[in-house]
Image 1: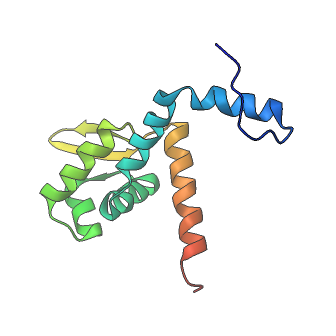
Image 2: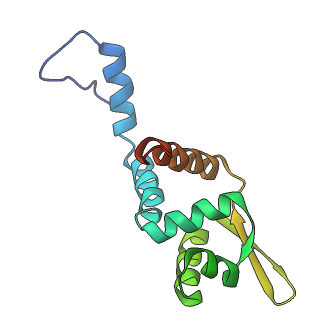
Length: 122
């Protein structure tokens, strides 16, 4: 690979090299974009946040977020496909919770920090 040369040199060669290496990996940014796309809907953010705090079935989630069960199921499928939540079956009931992954924990922390910053003081 040929060394990348910027039009304006500001004397930060090592930083530029690192940044260029990262930018040369578009698949990494695609993964990030797909994760954030999962949270581009207020309802999905609310459901994900809720499941970071408890494990619940669709009926209870629906009641808590004031949405129909089919709508909640739609959002749950997307969150599960994205790896942010997991489910377990107990008899006929399926329970959902946030996945125990670094990505899920980081997104939960980020949501809570943004809520703290953007919500009016109580």
